[in-house]
Length: 355
Image 1: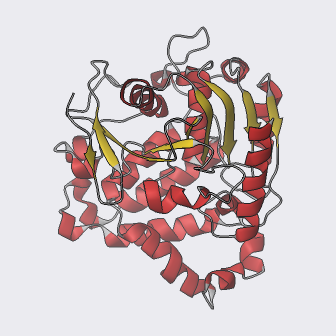
Image 2 (image 1 turned 60 degrees about the horizontal axis):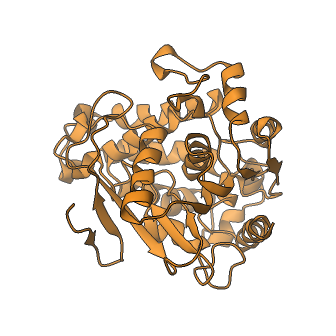
Image 3 (image 1 turned 60 degrees about the vertical axis):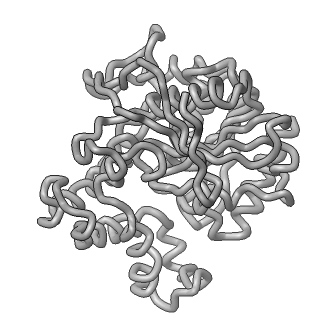
């Protein structure tokens, strides 16, 4: 195995050397995972995956702090691996395959992360797995695919299966990218990114990311924006402007397909080629989760409403629910914009860790 490569921000690139192909039947040549760790390897290990297009350090590091009750690197060895497609792990933008980069499922990502944890980091058991948004989907996937591997799971502001309403939103984002003439069916150059499509993408995202009450109370002013339009132009548009369009599309497709019933080798396993899984199989997949699982939605999250979380908890044998009473919508769960929500989330994580 080649030596891992470390970057200036301590992110490590680890090449995968397994022969199994992806669930879609293809493979990624010279495949690698990016990850970073906090804390000592001698401490109980926690897996904290990234979220949609999120950067390992800039977008996950906010919840890691020696003053926190939860992700405290003085108490835990915290591992943050990046999703395929986020630009740090293997992605369309850093692969010779470009637009032909194959589809990767949440399970494909979990399996690669399991290789990293067991073969590279030599860890045989995790104290916990937790994550926000697509990181929550990964948490559910780990708890389903490797039910005996962790003691606790805390998915926050996410789901074990992407809901129909969420999928309609995600498809509109793909359309925004693809309908920009500069997208050129994915054949654009680095210097000619489809910026118009990404601006529309950001405007659509702005509708769902925060709640109606957030906008009604003009809480964007707490983030330094005097008006709604300044918020769109100063927060949302730059959030995606620097990100590669093929990467964004790739991860949207992963998000759309997120479904724990697609875990192979189980009586309830579902082949995604056959459409959406049945509710009965979904219930059985949730029931297979053995670990103590705390599901944490936000009351006003339009992607992942508490009703969906209540359904999940009702079918997880050791499942429990904590609802964040915030009007910051999906962004109550990250990436650390509202100190009140950060404190609430950290405290509930800490309580679950202490049990």
